[in-house]
Figure: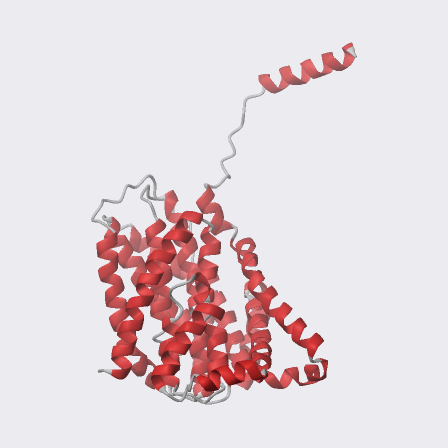
Length: 402
């Protein structure tokens, strides 16, 4: 017993005599959010889990339809999504956008100016990188700003989430619902953008005004400027060339030949891109195609949708928004598109429906999971519902009054 006590005393004395070494590699909490990005992304898999559970239920109730599941999937849309996810992941991993953003932030003096700058960047990114990829660039970057500035970034993050959804609606490759509509109706790229431009412009201008009202002209309080980001030029060049080639291939209807080449290039030279591509999101969309087809085949759902008389543009508009709030805007798009409705009204409604409740858009879920803050979660819904109400009014006026 005495020997044991003596050993303990020696151990304690040794610990006291050794100087404490500070771990300089420990990141601040918010910076850890950005650093542990892949770990955070796994948290959104519960959305996939719900979809798989629904599929399992259908399979148990109607096992005779299992062999037809592959027929229910729009494989052309899946290939388009897969290609875009790989390419935009390459763009993100090149660090080019984060490098440019940090360079620009150094020139800013005021909080509201920083907000206007980052909101504009988020909106532009989302037009061409899809909204979920843009979120994975913009939000971690904004979280990392806590190592540079002392200002509160909560409102800035909320405004960025809204900006990503608003910006993505302009482009046919801005978000999954637009990609599906663009492909299903075979709409020329710039015709799609022209149709969506009035809604984008009015919503984006309102967002800028809202930003100036929410954030005052408070000076940015800097406590260091640490920018060790380097751009991977080879990956950036490859991704830009692949992006242009892929979009042109879709316009020329030769995606089936171009996609394997692009995947092969990344497989040989940039395997890390394929490893970090969000393949669970691709699986989610495959499962959603099957789930929505099975749901639309149920008499109660079919009768309800026919009762709504979706051939009437105003009914389709409000139904798309309401369904987006309940089941998210991508499943709502799949479900309503089966009724061969007006694509412009459908695009307006499901994009507007991305605001409001967090489940309105998958990008909302990704962003709030990255931040993982109850305070931001509550604040987000206040501003998001305000933006939803205004968007509904603007969308209705543009479609049915103007």
